[in-house]
Image (tube, rainbow, N blue to C red; front, side, top):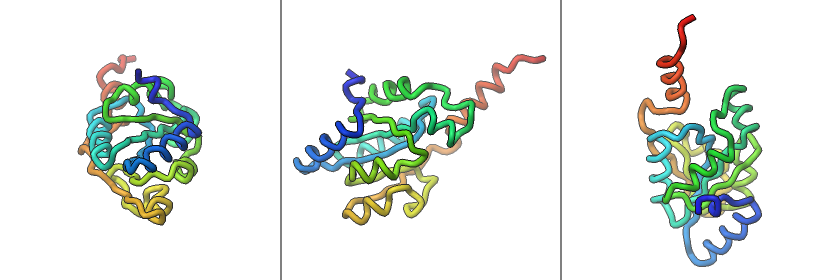
Length: 163
């Protein structure tokens, strides 16, 4: 079931056009989504509440390494995609290779663009495209003190072997 939610850009262009033609609001968000935690879940729930269809675009493994460094991602893009696709609130998942999502946003033209509250609206990549087309751009609140980096640091601290 969840693998049927994983789509290519071409498939998504067609699906977005069909949904919009039927009057459905398409919501787009993106990120690394490495080691899913409660902050990701709440973020995705809030994003989904903004419209009718939620697309989650994840950074490819190579893209994550460019952003986060050589030790990330912890989970490969195929695993991250399947995990996200298993969530009921997520309609489609796709992987993009670029460091930022500007190109895929320009191709899909979602109605609503959502990012976490650590961004100001004018800092959200693609805000200009979505606003110019009459859409909305939202920054939803983050769960305080919850991050993948924090989870990794906790694991390392708890399981670090003394030398």
